[in-house]
Length: 418
Image (cartoon, rainbow, N blue to C red; front, side, top):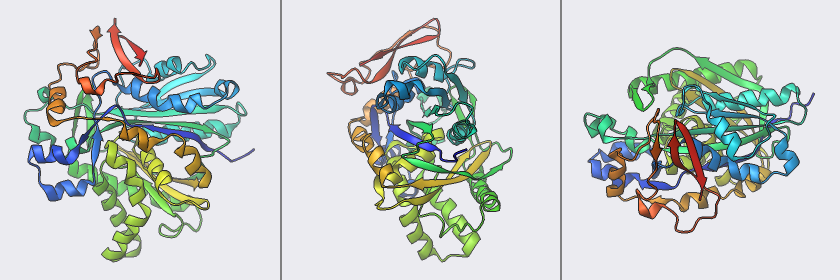
């Protein structure tokens, strides 16, 4: 039985609109040194007619469109990974299945475990392929999460503090198969660390809460614990020498920097200058897209992977280490190999160019969206979307390849291509 498995095709979708986070921090009067620690440039802002379904479909469509009819027919599992679900029972994967015109002989379901959901979905798909229960089958794993802030939800804007500029939106689509052109996973090489903690949570469908300091401590504990478990399963591994590049779950760049520093001190007692140089070399490339879309929750570590592949010079295959963390909590350190073929395949998606096309919101337009008057909230029975809520963001001439929410009728969401 072959152990060759991983990501065959991959794409990142960063929405239709973005906001300059420095402008936002200036507007909010936030402390600039603390802002600099975020290592953020822009964040994606989900427009009212964008939701987890549209993000997922728009990420996955280029992946599926590149397949032959026969290859598309071998997609036998669709897994959506999200903490931004739109229904307590109905899975987002059902909408994905419909709008991508996939075969009816398909297993559809959804995974929720905060920001760890994407890694969980990938590992489930990997084990489905490795099991050979359906030789040659493929699995489509899509992470999709959005953050919506609304003035009506906070007693004061200051309560959002530094989570507002770093909270973003985005989706990552990954086709998992036994022909891993983009990322070949090291089968059986992983480490987990988990415990119960109330660091961040969503106690209501449209409510986010948490303790930033507690979340940081849990993240650091899990990073060390998951890597320690990895070393117990993989003989001869060395954090500095075994991985040419690293990709961590990225709520914001400063948190990744702190976790890397924690490990380097714990494992090697490395001096500060060497830690800084190692971070720039092995983790700096992973921030390329994360600092443009913000925290994408379940997809964050894969946004980091895409940034690394599209940014580093790849003239030969290299091993990369990935760390995924989900509040609550569960975490995993795993690894795999990327190559020049990875760069070629992912580059065809034009991720950076698509991010450049987003409409840049003014502060006034952003704050109009914060009013929440146009937002379709969880559990909405009937609604008709105003596609001109931000006139400049709506394309004058579309190509019929972008999905948006149009109406909600009897709780059923209806979408159109523009």
